[in-house]
Image (tube, rainbow, N blue to C red):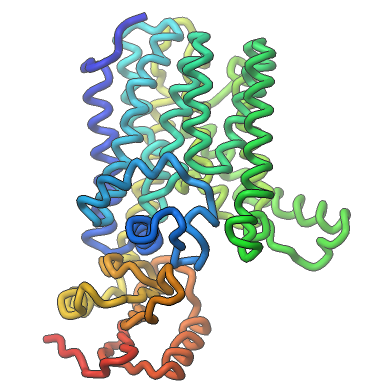
Length: 460
């Protein structure tokens, strides 16, 4: 086995992986203010710094570990304490993702490739759109699921080398990223048990994955939120007829047989350069997660550039390697597949950035950012995407004894997808008025409400 540490074989691709992942997130956040999840991530870390692990995520008004259990991404915390800005989160995430690149090189070497061919495959992984894209897919640059990609790829390395202690450690690190990683590790356990023939190891991984998935989802998370949040109810919202077994089956089949389901499968097939029976036993590892994602009603779970299926990328990469044959040449099909996926990612990102520009009143946002005191509580309600106001730290705040938000920003000009409808905004503003707030700044695209100090803000 060739030594991979501090080697130019993977060092330059790793830097390129970091630069692309961080660069796309930074561009969206800084230049176009389209980071729709920036507020939630920023507030979660501000909350943890100020209130410890008992803090609440202000976006959903539940404990920070009430929506998902994400422990490994807390490696961001000391860096965020020094530099409490959103790029810190995106940068650490990009560094962790880049640490998967030496694993890609080592995995390529383990399949018998020459150093030259292994380098080609390493670049293929480092800049693959289905590796880079989910880290900034819908302008949600910080996602705990992305942290799991690196330990999962390393787990496949150690499985190939039969280093089961390190393999198990990597899977535990992956499970610490979010509870639904258990679906991916379950698939890997089935692969180890069935395809590799290591019954004892495979059984242990299957039991660990099922046990953690059930315990975290049906016991720990409901306990933390005292029954006020149910991740499964959010993923599988009830609809008429689902009270019966037949109705539930009909809903599940209806969700599964969407165009987006088959579109995702076709896209993955093309983007990774195609699969045949050579890699069929490995692709079994993707079934548990894909099955759950395809049963969810939302199209977002089927998007190749969102984070939901990001943890499948290591499996697809190894499958592509196994397909490459004895010489391991990165063939024309895979190069064209990569190019096709890259063009699609560019179109996806370009659409997000265009919509982030179109309709944005940047002059007002920059002015308000300068004039609102940084020690004031700012509630950011933007139906078209968050702005740099993510430093505000508050939506409802994490402590119920904390005073209500002093300022509430309503931004309506953008077209970037968001969660707030016009009716929801109108209802929110009615509540603000009843609470004694008044509009202190207004343009056709921006309204700023102040709860106590009703002095008008002037912007040139």
